[in-house]
Amino acid sequence: MKKLYTNYLSNFRGLSKEIWLLSLVTFINRAGAMVIPFLSLYLVNSKGFTLPQVGWIMTSFGLGSLTGTWIGGKLTDTIGFYKVIVSSLLLGGIGFVFLQFIETFYGFCLGIFVLILLADAYRPAIFVAADTYSKPGNVTRSITLIRLAINLGFSIGPLIGGIIIANINYASLFWIDGITCVVAGMGLFVWLKPKKPTVTNTEPVLKHKEGVAPYRNGLFMLFFIIMVANSITFVQYFSVMPIYYEKAHFLTEDLIGWLFFINGAVIVIFEMPLITWLERRKLSKTMATFWGIFFLALSFIVLNLTSWSGILVIAMLLMTLGEMIGSPFSNALALEMAPKGRKGSYMGLYSMSFSISHIIGHNSGMNMVNSLGFDATWYYIFAFLVIISILTLWLAQLLKKSTTFASA
Image 1 (cartoon, rainbow, N blue to C red):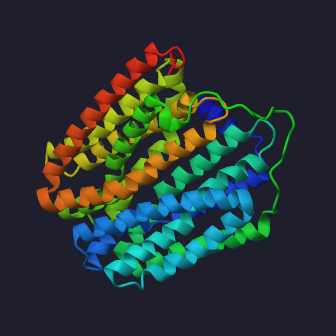
Image 2 (spheres, rainbow, N blue to C red; image 1 turned 90 degrees about the vertical axis):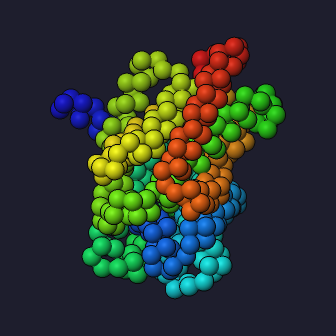
């Protein structure tokens, strides 16, 4: 065990101090965004919105995420990642504070759209920063550390948020969210010196683009559809599921926070060893994607097996297992399917799948629960994921027959 622990820590040695600072800021940013897991509960309990209205507000959330990521990428290329990161943290923090004062439905749609646009502009910039501040040969490990900070922040943030709501109120959550983001932005401005991306001549510039555009690649578009469909069900855990925890199992916000803590903590501790073990087992990327969808499907259907609240922990563990297996390998599969000179466009489309799922998933989930109830919704989601898993197996067979992607 000691050797395993030592080997785990050795993965992060030799990283630059700037990368550690970026990771700390990312952790504060993710932990600070503790409003998000409780947003649907806040909108229902404190603002009195109906489930369909909450669905439309969460659709605005998805539109803001999609727009913010796109604008953030464009601004990173024009004004630089440093200004984008600092501006995103400062303006996003101010946005969290002001969001609590909005009372109307349409005002909330607009407010959440603008807030998430500002907050998600951070995402493309932080990875460009990781590439810029990394020492030679450390880019992958630097990004891994930032991903670890994201998951650690996500595990601790909802836990703290739930305790704050249960013992104080929702208003204090918005204030703490906003202040932490502003503090992170100011800390970055003070301690991190701007640096321009290093241009090296060690890698040849690809003047010729191989293959076809992602929209003309039938196998990749099938994979993209699978990813969108999978993510549509996955995002239910961030909107519909908290309401289910409260309405069907009568959990308080602090207990809901503990459930989300399980997800992040398990990922932080077990994801890297699990992925290493699966790679040694030579599990194909497509089959890993299949198993990710399979465990996600199980996490919904088990909820209908019993009224015992302990099943919520089992469901969360099944979802987390699916996330740990499916997410890294599907990302790697997208990279593998992208031909030389077109990786940017392929990965851009792949990244959009999660933003699109926010636009569709929350709204559809809220309306299904409003019309059919929770139990029927879980049955429909399970059946939907079974179909998606079958499509994934079909994709695996098609990739095996393809000489280009035989190893996928």
